[in-house]
Image 1: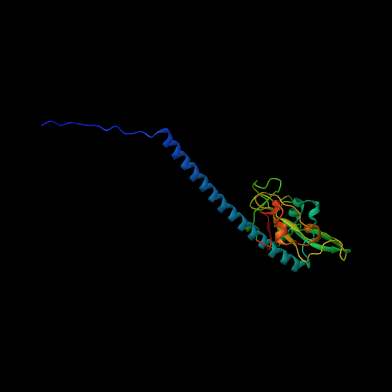
Image 2: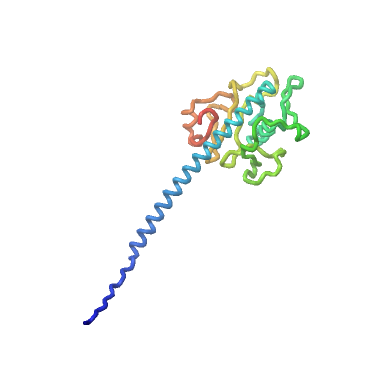
Amino acid sequence: MKFTLSFRAKRAFTLVEILIVIGLIAVLAAITLKVADSVSQSQSRSKAAADMANMATALEAFKGMYNDYPRLNAKGGVENCARRLYKCLAGQSYMKLEKGHVTFVDVEKASDYKPFLDISTMTVGDPSDPFAAVTNLDNDRIAFIDPWGNPYMYYYDPSVIVGAFGAWEGTSFFLMSNGSDGEGSEVQSMFSTGIMPSEDDFRSTPKNLDNIVFGWD
């Protein structure tokens, strides 16, 4: 009896097949990254909305204590305004009336700070270097930072003279984040007049499409 051994050669992948597989992997990776980025952006927007809700509650508590919201002039610079707002809500600074003028006084002792919100729930940092570690919360340079590394913007009547007639017509404050692109544009002078435009008008400006305004999102 004779036995015949036969061997069948294994066919290798062709270059075209390899390129097809690589292309499919690339497509799947792109889809995965897009989905992951979408989820991340959604989480960031939720975090920003929650932060501003906490800040709004703290601002109401501040008003309950001092009969007004912090009168901070954002025209002097968003970062400086954000730093001063941090000090107010962290209980490091208080508002007082002196000879018809609204002034702010820093609390001298850290043991006397009476925060209006839980700082541990917020992200704080120096707006000029927002992702650097913060080791000292008693710092004139830090502010509340949004998920994209920018300070939250606060706008309210900038007048510091009681009874003065100014341009501000709003009955409350504005809180806003410029969103993922870090850009925004004024609409109908909302930040100088206190008059909030409709959401459609606000978002008609491309830079404002991703912005988050407290009370809208």
